[in-house]
Length: 306
Ligand SMILES: NC(=O)c1ccc[n+]([C@@H]2O[C@H](COP(=O)([O-])OP(=O)(O)OC[C@H]3O[C@@H](n4cnc5c(N)ncnc54)[C@H](OP(=O)(O)O)[C@@H]3O)[C@@H](O)[C@H]2O)c1
Image 1 (cartoon, rainbow, N blue to C red):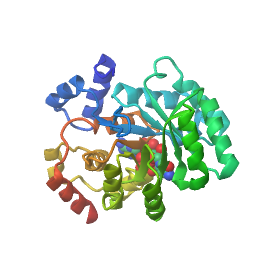
Image 2: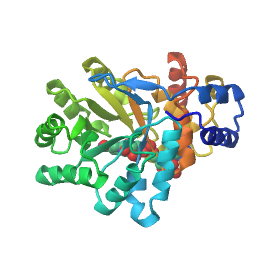
Image 3: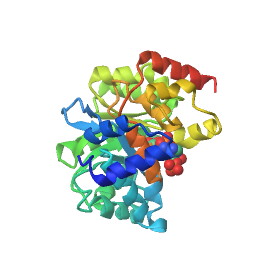
Image 4: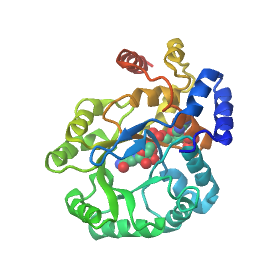
């Protein structure tokens, strides 16, 4: 992965400076590393641990042009990332996205997902349309969004995998209310991937869902690491605790991501952003020091009383 280009190093230095952190030991370490990877249990293929949730920026392609999405994707790739989670809804925006991901410098560097979010035949049509829009014969990962029409779509996804239209198949949830139905599904079926909401402010997946996926050999993608932005609103004006810098944390974004990333069940964490500087900051949270179990407990206790 092209992590040590001068461009990336300049971005990284600029970002560190903006964050008020000028630790050149960290800069040197980052420039020599690739983003940490985690294995997909069903195949052993690896994925970088920070990815992009792209719903908002893709929905704005018609209005804003392709440049914002291109800048974010290039930042992701330059910092060693690969996973892009999507949710097709509007053919004009989705085919704009297809043109972007098929540009020569991006085409082979991304792991692109899609989702089915409508019932019955409309959902099947949605899957077919996303392959057309994205200009792909094979999608890396096809997922059922929030268990929509689960027992209709699951056999379809299995057919997609068998026929080579999806390399991997999975299901998503982003709210606790669906955990029971998901657990019931995981008692009968073994998807390649499952997607859960999990963050320092939404920790319930730790109790059963993350251990369950780990025991069953299912790759885990995490959504809502920042509660769709509510996390930053809640912490506006709140200073980081003094001890955060001792465990390598210099921003609230890093505080949530570095809490999430050490969990061994997790394969990749989606951070949604429309801002390349935020993409760089989020990707860089994958590098360097990670909190140990005691530090993670301290972080959770701190956030609970903010
Ligand atoms: N059921 C499902 O399948 C499901 C449901 C929800 C989400 N998801 C997936 O998970 C992805 C992420 O979850 P989410 O949508 O809840 O978003 P999120 O990543 O929890 O939060 C996104 C918000 O955080 C802000 N942000 C991101 N990085 C930042 C940084 N470094 N500093 C300050 N602000 C930052 C973004 O604003 P800026 O644009 O200004 O950076 C945006 O407002 C989605 O895009 C989607 O792919 C799936």
